[in-house]
Image (cartoon, rainbow, N blue to C red; front, side):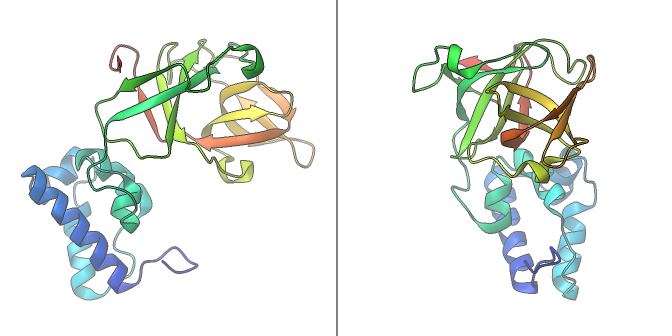
Length: 220
């Protein structure tokens, strides 16, 4: 992928090859998979792009949508990273506040995390999960939902405008929509159901990669 986010023709062909291998493994047609991902023409357009040498044949957003349908990860579809068919278990490493204030140092979480859960889609090896506490992000998230993100996180600037798991400089953990704060280097944490938290410093942030609704995951 070049600096503009476009694939080279060879990379695009590799992406298509990986998609087709998952279609074959699952016995799915390209049309059925695209419909299930709510991207009706995605794979057809990708095939056309490969045939015509068009470098803009697929977006990362489309691969993220296709990944659970193909029972794989977006990272594998994109670059062949990890296993084509990873496991579907992830460790819940703590709780995250959506209205509730979570102070990780007082959680008394064991080093291995709270518990492991089984979810109805593939999980990347570097994924971690948090259990949502509180209702400030309702109706997007309910207390008891589990959110999944990447352990390494991202720079806070990269998640501005998105919902993310964050740990603030004063040691609190939240699930919020991130906006820039009024002071350079700070951020506002917005809720759907509560007043925003203004001008905080963020030590760690991770975009939400998946949500498992309360009652749809099983503790292992």
